[in-house]
Length: 174
Image (cartoon, rainbow, N blue to C red; front, side):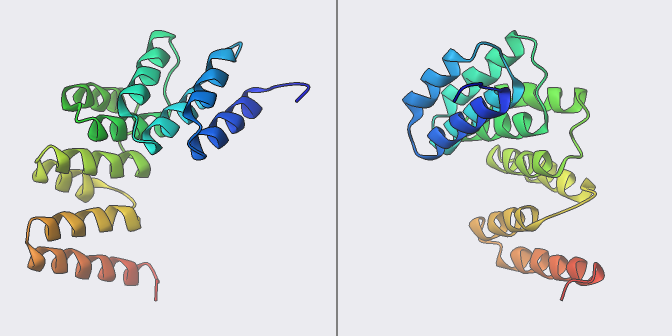
């Protein structure tokens, strides 16, 4: 490739990560002549996808140390890495950053926060995030239904399912 841009570096890192070629992606990340939120997020996301949560968090910390401001995708990825790596103390700091950067209403971030709170055993905080969401998607609803089912609360799972159906119908879904 004659001229490598931030976008081309990111595409290459993402493609390597998706194919499980983590070492090659890391080598490429280290060769980038500049730091970019998007390329770093692609690397962190790839680490999460490959179950390498500590490595994802290292990328996240490196971004912050380089004064790169994370975006909503980065923050959602950081929460997923904290959940996967059971780094709940660090997750609290990430939540603080989410609030500071005003991403607490972002759909992807909210879905990650719901999962975080549920994995920490804080059902009520997860419900608060869910109830305050301006928009919900399949991930939002499925996460709550799954948790009720995991807890053996099939009536609760059914209640959430029925609420989901009512909300979808009110929005014109079949």
